[in-house]
Length: 414
Image (tube, rainbow, N blue to C red; front, side, top):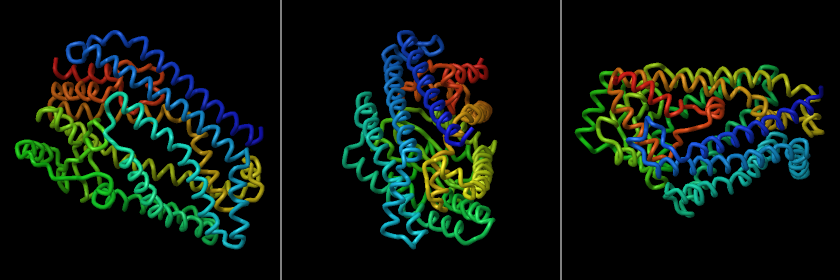
């Protein structure tokens, strides 16, 4: 079987699976739209439950349209000759500057892909989220964020891309190993500098001012052995009414961040329980394990790329008639997600396991009862469906379904 046939078969199969699972999800959610699950009937109204069902269906329909568009775009870029056309265009300008030409070819393809994704992002923000009362952004903020994301991405990704192509050209057979070491170091540095230098470009972060809440949180952090650079409130309400809390940073740069919308909706007991859940991720070393997993996967991926770039069929079977280092890198970035798609249920299962472990930690170090109350409020206020299709959930969801998660936590309070 040629590589072309394998690629096309997997691309079609993955797209059809996405459509099938999405269709199941919409049908299941709508079939349970008119009855609030018994475990939530005291806290979530039928109107709120129906809003969540309709919001979930709207997002899923948009995601399915986007999936088909992305599959078609990938086919056009590869087998349709799109990448080759971009390469040919830049070769007429920079015939003898392979590294610079490579950067421009890759950036051009990514720019076109970003322009294709842009209408979906705009539609979700200003039509879907707007319809259901979540959007707080203005078109000017949307454009401003887009420009800043693009500039930050170019400033950070451009040098790494240049280094990658330089190593591929002149570092010998083990260029991929040197690139992996640089890539790993870059990611660790980014984890450390992101909270202080990058995140503030997009949101305002102010120290937590509620002294009573601050004292409770600091006591919990001390009890759990967590040292942070500070407790901060993020102006999430400037863009969306969704609420959340998270840890960010690495090593001494760790921060605890609360969305202002979360602080408005939850009381002190509930906030403490949510934070205890996040501390559970820290105590179980979930972040470190995921970083280690990312490094391991990138090691294997770059080693594989080091072999593929010397295989003529890798280029020819994907619509490229002139092999080059930068084209090998671009092709690998484009097609590898197609081959990894069927691994998504495994990764989702691992993530749900981590969530259960964090819930278990929160139940033992704070209050399972208050975590349940907090989760119910978050499900309601974020319009998260309480009745996802089971198969869709198994395949995609990084968090356990609401009914299973609440049932497990309720065992601690009974």
